[in-house]
Length: 438
Ligand SMILES: *[C@@H]1O[C@H](CO)[C@@H](O)[C@H](O)[C@H]1NC(C)=O
Ligand SMILES: *[C@@H]1O[C@H](CO)[C@@H](O)[C@H](O)[C@H]1NC(C)=O
Ligand SMILES: *[C@@H]1O[C@H](CO)[C@@H](O)[C@H](O)[C@H]1NC(C)=O
Ligand SMILES: *[C@@H]1O[C@H](CO)[C@@H](O)[C@H](O)[C@H]1NC(C)=O
Ligand SMILES: *[C@@H]1O[C@H](CO)[C@@H](O)[C@H](O)[C@H]1NC(C)=O
Image (cartoon, rainbow, N blue to C red; front, top):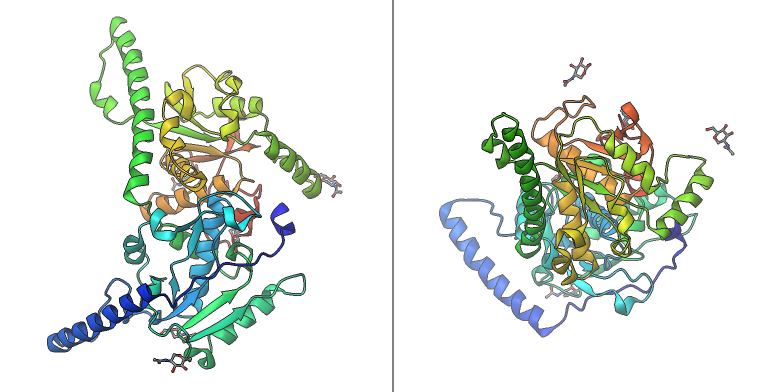
């Protein structure tokens, strides 16, 4: 993939020795001493104070891992973040809350618009949901800021996965234990070697909850979609009543919608055609016509249904994406939906995170199995079904079904799609695959 051709950049580091940090550290120490006193009185041996010093599960609250700023698209940033978490987990360390990047500039570091993790995702919620698995810490928790061991990641072809793993094992040994912070020096964690199974990544992703401000924006978009669907359904029912049937208003309480992540913009088409040639796989690119037709052939959808089209911004001017859909499928993108102003307020990362949420929560999702965005959504939807005890077989009765429109399925529709949670690496999700389990 083109990502691999990017140069390794000079990476950002965060000064730990500011006056502010010291003050916070002093306050923290005082608080700990007080707390310890209280705890001894109560006869408790351990406590977890919002990522404090004590831990039940081997993950130490007083040993940290620091990683470089996380860059690129939302999906690559999520994968990179999870990989950093799993690296910290392997070292039994708390991951110092990394910086994310709000913009999509690849090369100009000064334009990356660094944004704190906790400005996008809920910090406390993360630690409570992931408790016992991985843990995030704040820089203010680091007491000795000079007590740092640098871990230089290798690169290039000779830097194999095995060497990378050996290095991690070395840094998890006793000799590293006296260092408060292990600071990884090297490229974006997205490009580190992957040593963990899919289910470990899924476990981290499900702890990522948007901060209220952005979650509410996603709610607004989804409410708008459902409101339009409700209207369409009541019109339908009204007609039914005129024809002698009874309208059932209770049915209108829940209005399902479908989300289609359409990748048909020019850049993607060039990229996917090249990928098809290189990998000798013909089912990567889908034209707008192919997507429209396959989505129209999905049998399990009651019509009318609103179709939310998640498309690149430059396609919003293209009126043809709204035409050609089967009767009863009501296509909307953010402009026609009247929510473009919500997105326009925010930088790239947030826009993308809102769209992600809208697709994640759709009753039916259709995407491209070679898109990381689509793949992560299907991963989370599969995980959600597993969590709720909904059998995630490929049977028709599946709740929250997902489909890959780039692969032909039954009845000329798109292929049903589940993530293989037993997969031993994230390869298929990071780089796309036409193995969609079903
Ligand atoms: C991490 O903690 C677990 C559980 O306490 C322990 O078994 C393991 O040896 C520790 N690993 C390292 C690298 O410290
Ligand atoms: C902090 O760590 C450095 C380097 O390991 C060490 O020399 C120094 O004594 C430590 N300071 C404190 C207050 O523990
Ligand atoms: C590409 O795949 C087709 C069938 O899937 C096969 O017949 C052909 O030999 C393959 N070509 C290469 C270069 O691998
Ligand atoms: C899925 O379908 C198969 C064959 O139709 C059936 O035997 C099986 O019980 C179904 N599984 C679930 C979980 O519904
Ligand atoms: C899922 O992945 C595991 C491990 O790679 C593999 O053995 C299994 O066959 C896969 N299952 C499906 C349905 O692809």
